[in-house]
Amino acid sequence: MANKTFFNLETIAALTAIVVSIAALFIAWDQSQVMRAQQHASVWPMVDTRVSIAKDDKAYFLSIDIKNVGVGPALLNQATFTAQDKPLLTFEQLDEFLLESQFEGNRQIHSSSLSGVLGAGEARVVLKVSWPITDKNTEAFRQLASNFMGDSAVDLDINLCYCSVFDKCWRTQDERSSPSAFVGYCPVQETDPIETLMGSLSSSQSELEEGINQGD
Image (tube, rainbow, N blue to C red; front, side):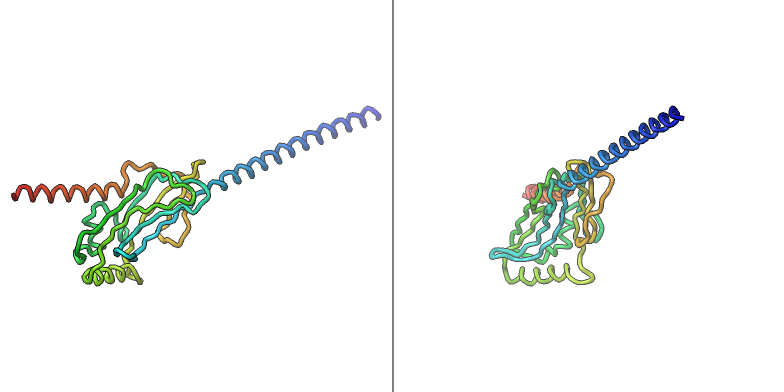
């Protein structure tokens, strides 16, 4: 009887040790998962896009900006530039929405890449088109501004797919007020849509100059 009792106690002690070991292992695993999640959250990026139509002391302008309002760098892997949900591949297409034919004077165009790294808190002017302030341009600018307001407003949009340094990825939503949606991965684009747009402008200018030279 004593031997049987001793055996049962040994068995219970062994089983207890196994249960404690398993519990300790689970707690350690759970803590590592929590720490991993905290580590990932500590470097999450969050990229916002904004279209501004305004004026300063020197010019009227339309500006498209992106800003990383998150706490970690954003790796910009893919981007599309659209108007009314259709890709903008040439500046000629964009000019239809900018009412370029109604403006006078030399416009100024500034652009930045939609690829690379956008640091936490960093803002980037992706595209800015400005026109000198004149009476004619005032009327054209009022019309331009009205085209971007109301239910039938022009939908000029930049859609981004970006990742954190831990390869957690998001895609911006069509609605600018909506947060970015989590996605499994972001395919790396071969061409930057802004560079493509600016390239079309350079090509058009070269063709224009070539035509003038041939005319001479």
